[in-house]
Image (cartoon, rainbow, N blue to C red; front, side, top):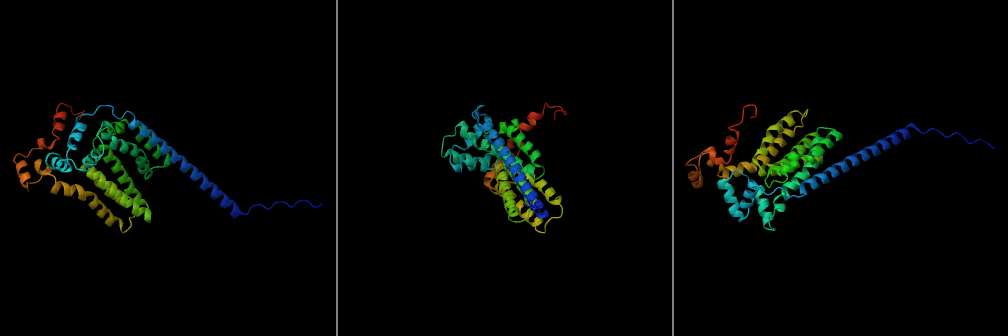
Amino acid sequence: MSANPAPHPPAPVDVAVAAANAEVTRHRRRWWGYLLAVMGLTALATFLRFYRIDRPTLWLDEALTYGRVNGTLEQLLNILAKDDGFLPLHYIVYWWIGQHTVLTPFYMRLVPALAGAAMTPVMWFLARRMLDRKASLLAAAFASVSAFGMAYSRDAKMYMHTWMFLALSTACLLYWLQRVGWRSWLAWLGWVLAGAVAAMLHVTALLALALAPLFLLTKGRPRWRDPLLFLVGAALIAVGPTWYYYYQSHYLAKTGFIPATTAVDQEIDRDPNWNRSGLDWIGRFNTDISSLEL
């Protein structure tokens, strides 16, 4: 009998393909592992924000929110336009919720609690634009158990969802600057929409637009269309608050920042004073604070 022939060694190309397939498999496993970790942290954040959500009891600013949204939509918009400097989106959402259910403490804090839970995956998405997976997971973990975040997730004001949409907008901006193709266009749209929502929740979100040009200028060699799309996106984000403050709200005339142009403005403008802004408590609070504490 003849001996069995020795097996032929695998061709080099087969070894390379097997190694590549093994690397793809390991990459997919790691990706699914990190995804499950982010989902677990999001579940933890959701539990922490909804557990005994009615504690502590509603405080002054939450009671004022409740008072503003209990009338008709017209009454709400008139109150905001004449007496307050707040943008209307947050209060319109609460007014809409109040049309479908009783605004118990749970429903008063439902929106910020959802935004606080969503901050965990949003922070992961934002961190991944700048850091590796492990560092991004750590950032998401901090967001999920942040005492600061949990406190504002139980506050029926607009701050938590403003920050969440602002973080999402910034992440989409960075993603847009780093990618090409249809994902780039989708990221640009996400930047504009999330930024516009954040800006209509609280005007301070527009401060992020001052940082946005730095992202554009430091990304390396920009594509020819990037500056144009950036200007269009920034204008779309800013148009809502600009239109509201100049054409609907009387807040700027009330505080003396612009001259009175309507009968209501002229009535308010008789005594323009920063103390009428609603922010005069800041000065009183800081009066007895030392320079070091300040």
